[in-house]
Amino acid sequence: MSEVRVLVGTRKGAFVLRSDEGRKDWTVEGPLFPGWEIYHIAASPADPDRLYASQSSGWFGQVIQRSDDGGKTWEAVGNEFAYDGTPGTHQWYDGTQHPWEFKRVWHLEPSPTDPDSVYAGVEDAALFHSGDGGRTWRELPGLRSAKGNLWQPGAGGMCLHTILLSADDPKRIFVAISAAGAFRTDDGGVTWRPINQGLRSDFELPDATAEVGHCVHSIALHPSRPNTLFMQKHWDVMRSDNAGDLWHEVSGNLPSDFGFPIAVHAHEPETIYVVPITSDSYHYPPDGKLRVYRSRAGGNEWEALTDGLPQSNCYVNILRNAMAVDSLASCGVYFGTSGGQVYVSADSGDHWTAIVHDLPPVLSVEVQVLP
Amino acid sequence: MIRVTLPTHLRTLAQVSGPVLLQVEEPVTQQTILDALEAAYPMLRGTIRDTASRERRPFIRFFACGEDLSHEPTDAPVLSAVAEGKEPFRIIGAMAGG
Image (tube, rainbow over all chains, first blue to last red):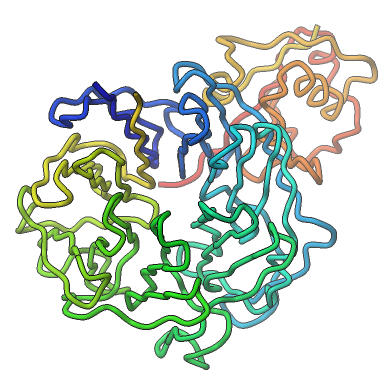
């Protein structure tokens, strides 16, 4: 029977949640790295026992941890994230230019084929790569050449928070940055271009359709549809069917199209999930009801999934890296909240249960299915 | 031997339970102490001082013999009691937050 392993990053450490494919009974391990912020833990698809964790602290800076035995033991590896050449400047909150300064790693994305190859999305926004299991890191500076001087921090900082590696083309990578937008490379990261046409940011940007500057909260794709992207923007849920060349809105009947994560069902490439949040001023669900919304039509037509989720007095948030799906035949959907709950649905979102209720605020959720 | 005490989180990271003992070549300065510390415990690189500028991180302080040495020149000899191993060189996580 398969084992399911959920990797949870929180404000005060990491937790590993384990179950079998029934996903009913769970064990909770942790906290790992207690007291440290764990922005992300990710597993290598090429070696499920190879894990990477981003461990950071306002006092002690950034540490990258690596495990080669599925999380039993960890080793601190390289934490030197030096921008290539002269870092230059980006736009600051007040419109002035501000020097690029490394703050933390938001997202780690291991290669699908090589356990030693891993990408890191960092704040201030840039993309780094390690080819030696995290011991050394090298920036892919072409990304910041894509009008980086016009990028600006969102409320959470200027972070590169999403990295999508293409399943069919090793030279194609998508990234998303708050508040710069989405970007794509087709040459392995040498050159990049903004892919934000079709986005509208009427309340956030002087030019609502600017080439860069959009506050993209998350993007997702299904491996079988490498040109179809879904996006949760600050406001608006968006879709592109041409690898980001042009986006159109699919918010449809959502009660709010503000939110953070977006996910795609493991086996149904037109089934997607979001968690509507009231607004950018009220980072909690509308009406105090925690509802995941599912569209089986690739957007526009959404249904509320509520069974097992609190439907009164719920005022948590769900952050952009805190939702994941597993690959079991009955697709599991997982998300973590700012209130420390981690919810699971073992039936594509129809029914939900809380695996844990009282962890520290959850920053990220990833899931593995082990043979 | 120079004695260095670390804040809790860095003791955990370095996998030590008490003061760290270091052999440091003379002259003993903040810089040479930290160089020796990072050589012996590479996982601490970047957690006490910036990896590029090698400046003390903002919320890290250095104390010895009841004195705050955080703003002393990093290449100046440390107090003799520290250099002689009689008193520890204390690395402290500053109180911050609420």
